Amino acid sequence: MVMKDTISNKLQEAFTPESLQVVDESHLHEGHAGHRPSGETHFRVYIVSQAFKGKSRVDRHRMINAALAAELSGSVHALAIHAQAPGEGGT
Image (cartoon, rainbow, N blue to C red):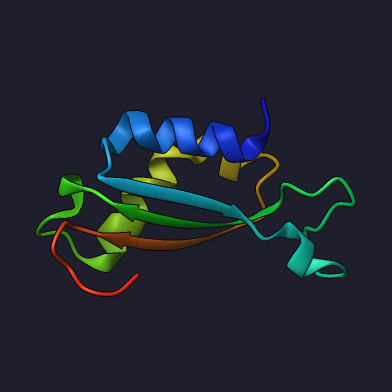
């Protein structure tokens, strides 16, 4: 299974999101720290879930980082997070 799918599956299971998009941005980080020629090192997550209602941005990031702890301590070098509760504006 590719890392993008692993991240998607774990976030789906942990947060039952209304919407979820995981983007592999590894190709944008060629020559940067943590980049590998095989890719799958830098990701951006857009997630909307009821689980984030009433939580601060920091708490939301902590929740996602905890759900992906194994990946973040392994092959994933960077994770940009856009986490919202339903009804919040922007992406």
